[in-house]
Structure formats: C-alpha cells, structure tokens
Length: 287
Image (cartoon, rainbow, N blue to C red):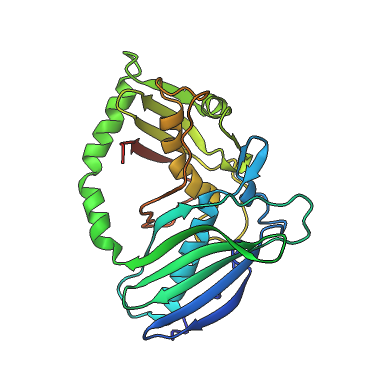
C-alpha cells in the first residue's frame, strides 16, 4: 500500500465502518456519513419537489469520486488507471432528511474487484426499524482517461460550432435565451432549487432539436467543506438536461415531467474551479 494516499474523510464521508480490502483481489468497504450534520444537511436538500427536499444524485457522485480516488491511490498506486468513472448511476428511492432528526446515517457499501478495476457501490440508509434500505447504486470504474479525453477534445470544434449556432439563433427566434431568474422560474413548477444549487447564468435552448448551451458560475455556492467535487457543481453540469426536457415548447408540465434518475457515465478530467465560468452543451435523444 502507498503512503501517499489521503485519509478517507470529507464532508460527504465521515468515517470508515469497514475496510477489508487487499491489493490483489479486492474486498469490501463501507463508509458512512451523518446527513443531519450541519455541514452536510443543506447539500442533501438540493431539490425541493412538492415541498419535500430531496437528495440529488450529485451527493452520491461525490462520495463515489472520493472513494474511487482513495482506493486507487491506497491499494493500486502504480496502476495507470487513475480516472474515476462514476457509471451506471441508478436512483431507486428518494433520500429525505427527517425533520429535526439528531442523526441520520447514510452508508455506501462497496464491493471492490481489482480484476475488473471497479467498485460496485450501493447507497443505503436505515429505516424506522433500523433495517438498511437502498436508495441508489452505481459502479465506480478506474480507467485511463487519456484516450477518452482525446476523443472529446477532437470533437471540441464541432461542439463549439453547435453552441455558436444556438447563440446566433436567438436573433431569428429559432432558439430562446433564458437568464438565471428565468431559468429557475421556468423550472419552479417541477422543483425548487436550493440557493447553493443555482449555478446557471444562462441557457440557450432549441426546442426542436432539444439542444441547449448553458453558462455556469458558482458565486452563489457556499464555500467551505472538503469534497472531490462539490455536489452543487456536479448537479449544475446536469441541470441543462432537465431544463431541455421540461422547458421546451412541446412539454406540458401538467401532463408529464422528466426526472434525473441517474446516468450511464460521468468523468471529470481536471479539478473544477469555483472562480471560473463554464459552458456546457447538451443534446437530448431518445434512449
């Protein structure tokens, strides 16, 4: 094992319950966080639906990113596969912080397999009878992100051209531009976003092609805490997808809504900076 790994403790991971992992085959690891703790409780109430604050997949994603990085650095430091891919994220049951609860524990149970360089993660809490119940699961895959990053960089000009076309379409009304206030007002019938989770400054939407470009900044996100990537930042990267599906000209929110229940693959190739502005491009297609 390497002496260069960081201690596994953060705002979203408070302690290790069990760590039975070796460097050859793998093993099991269980980590835990008290979501009622003052620094974590606002983050697990990111989206309010029908007056009920819900935990977003981005909290699970930060736990997965932190855990994957820790395991790779501690047990396989010489391996080139250091990029953490949070894949097959699937939300099965809403996680709701109980009002006035002095403590509410969330656990992540991981099955580590070095042959596949993966960790099967299940996110669990305790019900009123003290039994574990599952809220979400994902697979953390350790990979060499260089090739994937090169593939994406090769398409950078194409994506920038698409974003430019979206912006130019505002003048002939083929696309629509929404500022920050308009964005969160439009999505309000579906969900209310915690102030920390309001990072979109602008969306340009083509309702016909279901394309959108978003401009993000994180000045309203409360600083502090220890994360791999702040859950509000992760959430903001996916908000354009939900806006595209729920706020295009063809969607009637009285009849249908589109919710984010997970994703196929999520990778971050470099640290995201609170003080920088980011632009995303989204095109939604039927699966």
